[in-house]
Amino acid sequence: MISVRKTRVSLFIESNPEDILIVQDFLSVGGSKTRMISVSTVEKALSILEAEKVDVILLDSIEINEKNIEYLIDIQQRWNHLPFIVITAFENRWLSKNTAKLSIRYFLYKHSLNSDILINAIESAIENQELLNELNRRQKDLEKSEIRFRMIVEKSMNGILILNKSGEIEYMNPSAEKILGSKDNPDLSIINIDFREVVATTETQEIRIPRNSHKVVLESNSVEIPWHNGTAHLIVFKDVTERKQYEDILKSTLERLEISNKELEQFAYAISHDLNEPLRSITGYIQ
Image 1 (tube, rainbow, N blue to C red):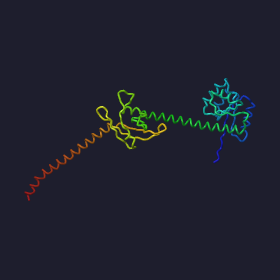
Image 2 (image 1 turned 90 degrees about the horizontal axis):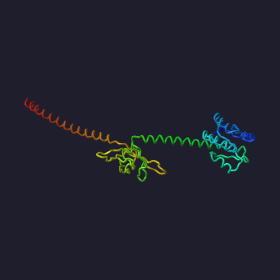
Image 3 (image 1 turned 135 degrees about the vertical axis):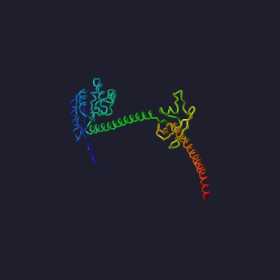
Image 4 (image 1 turned 180 degrees about the vertical axis):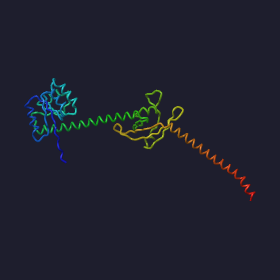
């Protein structure tokens, strides 16, 4: 499949008409699909950026001065998705001094500039910036996803903790602290639980914790996760004490009901036997 290069729009900030013509000629050679908009001042560049869709900004290094520096910083902050290419005739020492406040990655020297160098530099700068923009976008999406995930974890009714390979607790959500205790809460103490059995299997485990006059019953599951260049265990558990109490009550009730049914069967058998005995006597007498 042949890729079709789309038209690029470059904004050239240059006050020298001769340099504008030279750059325009370079872009018109070799079938370049770059449309150039030229402005003589940084202030005019702001107006163009607000009205036009621009892909790259070309900037003569002479425009980087005390008068324009704040405008240029403003442009970079507001249009931070656009790459800057500085065209200069100065040495690196001068550039480093005057571009320190700006984030500029691409420099072209006038004495070696030609059509191929300029066109390739524009394409490379745009493609690299697009990759950087995509990376930044994904990073922001990841940060938003992490925030949402943390909110879910923090608000979860289930206890969630992360246990490192040494058996130390790396993280506990509020529900876990409420169930197990927290070092930050003087009224509670961390319960000394051996989680080795929990993390040894992916099956649901039952843990019983002594708490004052009763026992707290937990159901827990564990899964191994990546953690700080290694692995750790994510343990999720919930308090099922009330459910277990109801199950125990139900079990006890069923046991009593079964005993009662057996006693009722025995009673019914005895009654039936007592009723049948006179009938058998009468039947024998008649015969």
